[in-house]
Every structure is written in C-alpha cells, then in structure tokens.
Image (cartoon, rainbow, N blue to C red):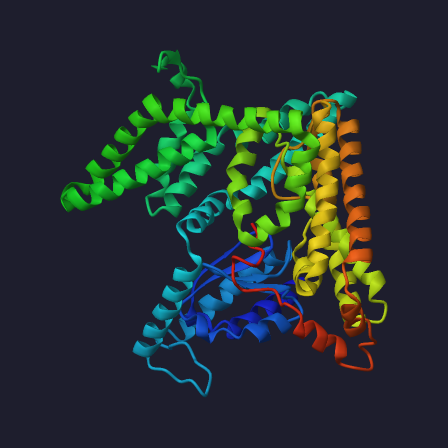
Amino acid sequence: MATDKNRATAAAILPLVGGARNVTSIAHCMTRLRLGLADRSLVDDEALKALPAVMGVVDDDTYQIVLGPGIVARVTPEFEALVAEEASAAPTATPTAPAEHVLTADELATQGAAIRAARKEKNATPFKLFLRRIANIFVPLIPALIGCGIIAGINGLLINLEWLPGITPALAAIASGFMALIAVFVGFNTAKEFGGTPILGGAVAAIIVYAGVANIEAFGQKLSPGQGGVLGALGAAVLATYIEKWCRRWVPEALDVLVTPTITVLLSGLVTIFGLMFLAGEVSTGIGTAANWLLDNTGAFAGLVLGGLFLPLVMLGLHQALIPIHTTLIEQQGFTVLLPILAMAGAGQVGCAIAVYKRLKNNTSIRTTIKSALPAGFLGVGEPLIYGVSLPLGRPFITACVGGAAGGAFIGFFSMIGEKVGSTAIGPSGWALFPLLDGNKGLGLTVAIYGGGLLVGYVVGFFATYFFGFSKQMLIELNVDTTTTTAPEQAVADSPAPSTDPAKSPAGV
C-alpha cells in the first residue's frame, strides 16, 4: 500500500512539471525532490503546492519539491521509473505546453534558454554557485554519516556499560570505516560535480589517507595519513579535474586512454603530497582551533548569534558553507560543536508554531497544518513549519529566530564553562540528534544540556510569538472560523508567501 501511495504521488507530480520529456535530471536530498527542467514555464507551481504530499516548492538552480524526510527517498525511485516509462513510450514527443501556449520545439528551446539565463543572472552569483557545488559534494554523504554516527553512539554506550565486549570492536570498525575513507568519497563527488572523471578524483584523494605518506617529508616535517582531511581531498580533486580537462584538449585521441589518466593522477598527486596536504592540514587545524576558541571565550554570545541567524542563513542558502566545517570538526574531534547550537533554530520554530496554534484558535486551516507538521518539527525537520506557518505569516518567523537564539545561548554558555556538546554526524537535529550526541564530560551531561537547550528554545519561541508574533490586524484577519468562511485563506493569500527566489526561501540539504 505504501508503494502505491508513493507511486501515486510521483504520478501526480510528473504532469505538473511538464512530463517526462521536460525532466533533464532527478535527484533528492533529505527532504526535497530536485529536478532539472528543460522548460521552467511548463511547471504548474500552484497545482504542485496544492498536492497533499507537497509541502512547498523552491525554484533554484534545480526545481525543488519539498516532500519531507523518508517520503522523498521513496517517491524519487517511483518518479524515476515513471519518467523512464513515459520517455520510452513516447521517445519523440516534445513537452506539452498549456493549450493556450503551444510552442514549436525551436521556440521552446529559445524560451527555456531565456528563462534560465534570466534566473541565473538574477540569482546565480559566483558565491551561491560555489555553495551549491559544496552542497552537491557533501549532501550525498549525509546518510552514511548519520548511520555511522548512530552506530558509534551505540558502541560508546555499550563500552561505558561494559556490555557485549565481544561485539564492540566490530561496531567500532563499522562506525569508523567510512570516516577513515571519507576523503576518497569527497574526492569522487568533487570530480563528478566539477565535470571530471569521478574515479580519478577519488584516486587522487585516496593519497591523503594512504598509510605510506607517513614516510614522506614536506615543508620540513613528516606527513601523517589523513592530513588535510576533506578540505585537502576537495582541493586535490578540483585540481585533478582541471588537469584532466587540459589533457582532453591537447592529448591525441589515440593516446588519451593511456596518457590522460596517468598525467592527471601523477601531477595532481605530487601537488597534493608536496603542497595541498600540508596547507589543507593547517587550514583544518585553524578551523578546529577557531571553533573551540569562539565557544570557550564567547560561548553564550556566539550561541545567541548562531542560533538566532541560522534560519535566515538557510533562507539565503549560506548554511551550505558550514557543511565542510562540520565535517572537518568531526574528522578532528569526533564531533562538531556547532550543530547542536544551530539545531536550536528548529526548537524556536516549534515553540513558535505552538504559540500560533494557541493564538489562532478559530483558524482550523492553519491549526491543521501545525498539527500535521509538529511531529516532523520535533524531529528537526523544520521545512513544513517554515513553509506552512512562520514564513507566510512574517512576524512569527522573526520570533522563531528569537527562540533559536535563546537555545543557542544556553548551549553556548555551557560550552564556555567547559561542558562541550557535539554531534558525531550532520543532518538530523531536534530530537533526532539525541542518538548522535557526544561531548567531553560524559553522555548523561551532554544529553541534559542539549535537552535543556531544546526546552529553552521551545519556551522562548512560544512566548516571543504569543506576545509579539501578531499585530492586532493580523489577529482580526486570521483568527476566524475557516469552516464557515474563506477569510483565513484570503488572509494567508494576502500575506507574504514563501518566495521561490533562493535568496528569500529556505534552500535545504
């Protein structure tokens, strides 16, 4: 039955994005179905948003349909199958435009190119394009980080309780194997993202984790396996990609299969060993030192700023810049101290939503949305509440940030007095982060501090929204019985809607 439901969702989405011939690429992240489209004008945004399974849409470099965690991973293969079936059934068909807007193939191509160019000119700044590429490299690694992180947490608990001593070494190997070789996966994904041969990127990145580099001296010191970590792997793979592209232009076709990979691996490998590993290692060490100094000396203030600004960072897509920083901290210290603080933004969002539910007692539409979205919110998935509640209403989004700031300040304060709270993986937040928690003073205290931060975020987000989240006019327009009048829907329609501009909308992982 679940398969039928997921296939039905995929079948409902496909015609609304212009059919199979309009879909050029399909991927998904934690919560979103990400589609490359040949012609953006063929998409029916409003009809997509009206589908029960769709929480919202974001028109970014790819067209993103928010379905939620778990669901998106099940709908995506069904969608891929439908696209393949429809494309094979009508291989010569062209995308069907609305009846009042029939175009020839050449006109479609021209219009699509114009739309893409205009969108890129407006939104695709070099910095944002770079951040999208960073996300495309690291987001596919998150499921493995989560799985290995949870296994590491279970193993640590078993060791502390002195249970199953014959099993814990195996669990340690399972949990640590991926992290020991994460540089290889980063190199593979980096080359793929930058247009090179993925396996060559992985081959060059593998040098970083090879035990034999301990016998090599660079910059007056012996190298150590893993030195430079994911940052070194990223740089090595980018370099390999550019060398490979240069070779493809100049090496004769008859020799390409032999010469290009050899030169690519040799040159980028030498630069990696005698340059990038040392330099990236220094940068990685600096990141760890800076993060620890920030929380040790300005913990409460740093937590206030990070927790309060994370939702706006997500809206601007700037949170993607933190992904390699989290990964670097996990490599160095075993956990990232930043993620639990940033997770407080979700706690403020939950408190905000509960306050909206209390204030709008007569608005059954918004209250129904909140009831359906709150469970996901408690588990750290904030998009349903952002799209369905706080962002459209405006002021509650700001008060949600206030709650996040308070929770972040709470955890930051404890970090400042020496009680560090960290996460062994990135991706989850809210209650879903509990299995991934780690720290420097024991699991019990770590869990208590993180739980206290969530509680502070809930409470402050609730009261900030309850007392300051609505103007009198908003309450008059919104707090009416939606079962007898359409006023609430009109009021919501008149309020700021979630923007499809990635500079204004959440652009999640």
